[in-house]
Image 1 (cartoon, one colour):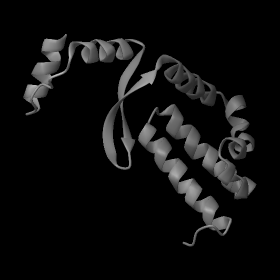
Image 2 (cartoon, one colour; image 1 turned 90 degrees about the horizontal axis):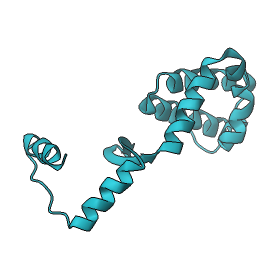
Image 3 (cartoon, helix red, strand yellow; image 1 turned 45 degrees about the vertical axis):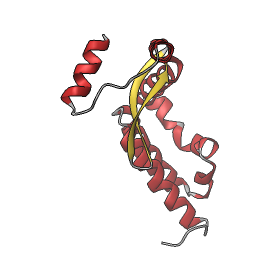
Length: 132
């Protein structure tokens, strides 16, 4: 397994890192309890280990939102999950919920992030906390 990792690094033009055995064992152990994935932090794509429980919650949410009945409750609960959404009128909450639902069902973290950023900006403008 380590040979594949080293080969991948070399094919990417990177040298293999020199890791103490206990660090490597710890990294393998941590990865064994979760899944290595990539997330974007301030525009930089970084590797992260996401716990199985977090992935399970994400899958559950995506499945729930495919149900029309569960999705119909989303506009009403958005202000509890995102307090800044409290300044949005009902029609905006419904639009926000629709866009968020589509992004979650598509399992696209980038789309979810974009929807949240865009709608938070709208809410902040409506609340007078931000100008356009």
